[in-house]
Length: 155
Image 1 (cartoon, rainbow, N blue to C red):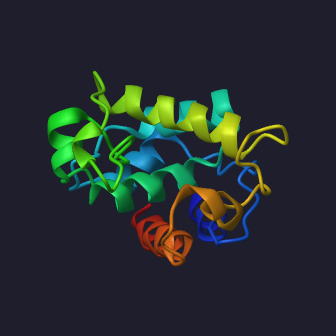
Image 2: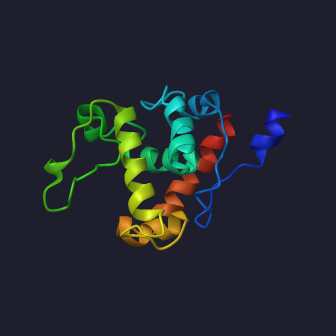
């Protein structure tokens, strides 16, 4: 059954992010119910199809970085990850037309720079590998996994 399939889905710091979750738009929307990110399920499915990146990783990343869509940048700039909000000048954060545009842009950058063998920040195919260059928080991927594994229970 669908419940049994979903029960075996999880994310850990060493998950190969090329292995897709194959969750549905409804699955993602159920996980995001009650958050400012509700309704983006179709985009997470699109990310898996177009960029071959596990949608659960992207879901956890944007939930963490945008406080479930409640951050100032998420609300006023549709920027779900603080893209270009450098420590020395957070106001450089990019404006996006929509949350979907942000998600697809960031997925494209992750695919090209972090998850491609010729990418400038390539270290491997896991969240732990991405974090070697993506951020300074050594617990970043653990936080992403904790969020995802809690949200999966809502499916």
